[in-house]
Image (cartoon, rainbow, N blue to C red):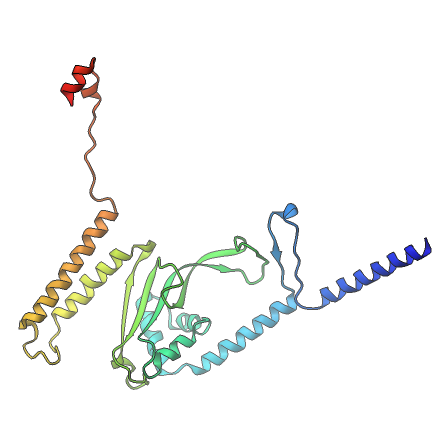
Length: 273
């Protein structure tokens, strides 16, 4: 009996020591049974949260130090187009985990496009526990972020930068070598956003274009006219498709009660048919 008591005391001490080291160490993970709470919670210790915050701050400041006139050009265009301050845009860019895409865009023969989405996104509270399904402690807020365009659903505003050549993008040529555009696809209405972008921005710009490179005749050239006609026709197709999707084509509702109320026998149905 004494041996059993000693073993139990030893087990209790071992468990207490283990728990103590887990509490003082980092991080502390507490998993509650599903039968008790219905959800599993992961709680980070304050030390771990502080360390992660410090690392994030260091990374942001390192990126802030890399900001030059090229970045400032992008930031100013985004701020004007989306309606944010330049400080807000800069903060969003240096906080983004895809920040390096900007450097790849500036490099010689680099990325052909650089995309930004500005739309509602779930953002987690920094001082709260995270559930395994992410359904708690999250807020739906507008967020500006860099994207490849293939990993996130598009349901807001898209701002894009396009390169016009394979030259390295420098502070002196960024305004000539990089084109900026933006279109609004609020609530995921991509067809309407693309239709407005083409009809209100691109087509008027093309029709007012004076310099068509090797084509000296400009807008009088038959190939240029055919091209502009094709773009106009494409916009018309977009408009028709959008209207069809939005159920703009509706069948007239007919009240058939007055027709069927007097049908008494099979011959009446045949006659009505």
